[in-house]
Image (cartoon, rainbow, N blue to C red; front, side, top):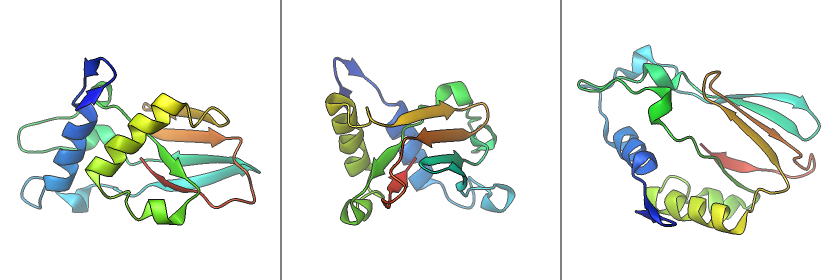
Amino acid sequence: MLFGDTYNTTDIDFLLYYYTTNSQEFDESNQDSKITYELKGPGSIVLKMPNLETLNSKNNKIKLDDLTVSLVLTENSKEFEYMDSICYLSKKIEIIESKNLYKNYSININKNKNEIEINKLDKNTNYYLNV
């Protein structure tokens, strides 16, 4: 998949890994795989992701530095229905980056804390997201 002038497979590799693992390769019962959140005030939220560094397969140990974490955020509930598609997410990330769609938000991704802080949200708007 081409992004700009470079060839990048990190995101897709992880998504494919995530969607193709099974109980023999990934023991979900030992993993906290839910994203939770904490409201920090009007227009501010912190997403708390599971510990990404503990994800194991039979052959790989994923390190935080090996992962690219991307946030896809929308106000459109219909668009949210497509967020389980690798193709859709890949194209959406490309559009977000090329059109600078998140310029009005403040987004800080802290992989060491497994957190994404999002500020400057409209408190009267519903947001739908995928990480």
